[in-house]
Image (tube, rainbow, N blue to C red; front, side):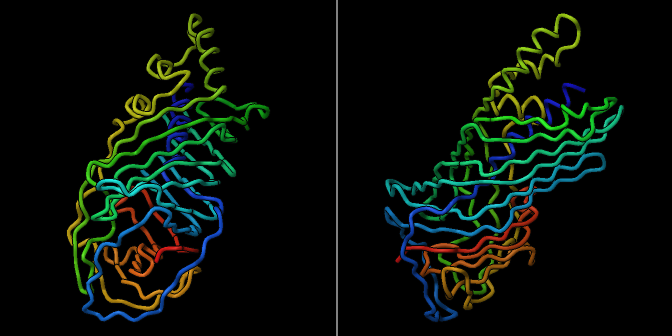
Length: 335
């Protein structure tokens, strides 16, 4: 039971950095456009410069996975996500972000001797990092992110064969984490040159997670485990070997199938239907209307913004477990 509990908590810590959101950064001048484009116009890949910035509003992100005996649900809330170009050297742009992230993670798992039912909440975790974007495709090559002493509240609702004392049902924990996500082939929803009535496939790629997790709470668990082990009450040796500083690759290998994940190639995954006026908080743009996965999601790319101005819908077919996202452009200084 102890082994399963620690494994589930480790899994949660890893999932909290899959997506990021941000607090407002320094105010920039907003640029928008209502210029009409011909339906035969081809949009070439934009050229970004150091200092270009896009600030997005993200209403919600929902990551959900359910099987016959297990449910995982991660809900994220946020205010703004600013992305600022730091470097244009070589074949990739380097962008930075600084974020505040709140949300809740719930896990339910039916075991032979009972059930695991745990929820974990976190509020205003300050997260910062960098993103590497391929110039020719605007595809993501790498994301690095880190937070220091983020505050988590673990609510243990149910454990197998154990009635949890009230004093131990809610456990506060401060956690420090850094993570690097690397894509073998840059991941992008777009293709260039972009034109109406264009159909294209999603590109298969593997992404790899690496990094580490630290916490005084993990140090305490490691200390107590060393005391309990000689008496036969210790953690499974494979789990204990992860403590006190958790290596993400080792943890994912121990509790899952490793730290390499695949996004599949899907034929005709994207269709650019037309160009139309789309209004977002940043203004009204003439944008390419791109349908994803047969209408499960919609993406709008505006050449005058040099970037996507809106994404909404379900991306689970191309990004595993991403059930819902709603993102709109708030401000940009791109010109």
